[in-house]
Length: 638
Image (cartoon, rainbow, N blue to C red; front, top):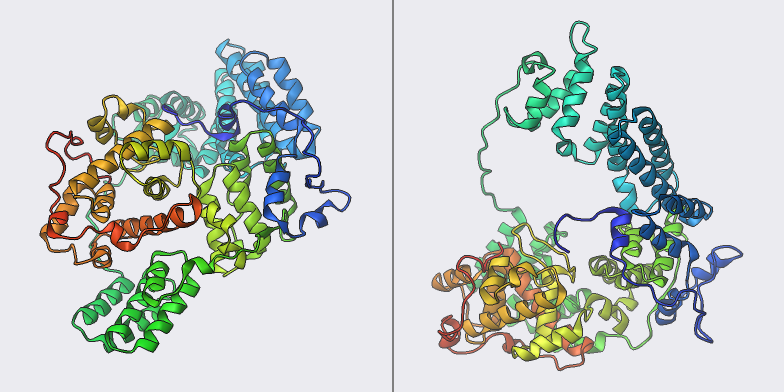
């Protein structure tokens, strides 16, 4: 979806698409989620096989959820019908917040139209009604997304009421409403979004009451807005038209920006020092240094890395028993990580044997949930049953990440499943990762693996992987690492879509593709083509191609010239000087292992599959000269 970003529950409704058969009875013999009343909560906290629970969600049809969708269709054309549906939703306690939001938005629209028609008194009454409704929304358990947007919604409505008061020359009332709007926008971090006209009206409201000068609160807010803008900017000029800037007091000169000194984190330095001992073949000292790092910095991102290299140090020092013990413990603690994969290979542990054949169990509720959280889960189930996945994702947002320790493992697995069904894969990953942290057995089941490694858009992936001579597992692995399967993902450097391509890169590969990157098929098609180009350039060396996909060909060629390539795959990955790229390459190789061995039913490849042998494979000069390269300087996303 291009253009302005749609936010809030109404925006998500726009993305719904069609509804399937509504109100259809569940299949014969299917287990259904009981209602929360009449003992239903106890039944919902009972552990059950997760697949029937997933199927039961589809039986949670809801007339209220369908009314909500129909209301969207009525918003621009039938205001009376919109208000009728809002009233119906407010009769259902579960959907009360949506009914209030719908009515509040309708009242604010009416206020804006009345104000545009010069009916200031009527506009003021409509705006006051909308403000009261939004205040009720805050008390009616809205979705987490709607709750975060409430300050903005209230602020916009209060600014509208302030404009109505201003039009009636009620300066004190206008000032009060504007300042309340400013406070709400400050809470939401949106102060810079006010138009010059709004700030001009506020400044006039302040100036009209000056006795003999504007009030301290006016000075405080006006100074704040002036400091957000350049002198001579439209907003500053709108304020200065009514209140002289010098009357707001002296403004301190802008402090010169000095670049922060580059420092190395102590845990990073500790790993570098330990690695230096290893490379100096002081294996006993290196093993001790790696152990000290893990003990001194237990939450460091280098801990698993240090544990793996401690095992390597013991092995190089001929302490084979200690080496095997370190590797086996690492596999036990982190079986689905890059270093767990390496440790399994080094110790001969069969990772596949770690995956349980016992069906995973989950619970649809948890005793630790507060009533509002119970409502949000129930609404998410109803939205999923009605095909309203974006709204389901909004309801579940943050549920499993805020204080996850309070929630039981069976419910966390259920929430992970709901997140996945709603298309919110990053949240599903977080929930399953918490189960892995707890070493819960259901985190190592085929069901949980498909949550961690979902085969999204598999038909398109297979189609374009075959077209460009790639394994589907490789394309899926890159997609997971690049965007976590978020279709509308956008990086700070401007990379877009599932495979995070820069428009210039895409355009260099396929004319017109730069404007299609937020569409699923064009993104996968061009992403596969770019991956093939990099593989050809690096003579089939997948590790170098992946590093270039993340950091750019120029950087990787620079590392080659500096002698940082290493002699094998592990050496290369561990020598990558940029942590983001090092993690990127290693995690894609990890993804590839699990996708190929467990999810899409192909054969797992050995590590050598990612590192072509021979000097020619490392030169970066195998791409055919006739093949068109991406635009220069566009391949790096960093």
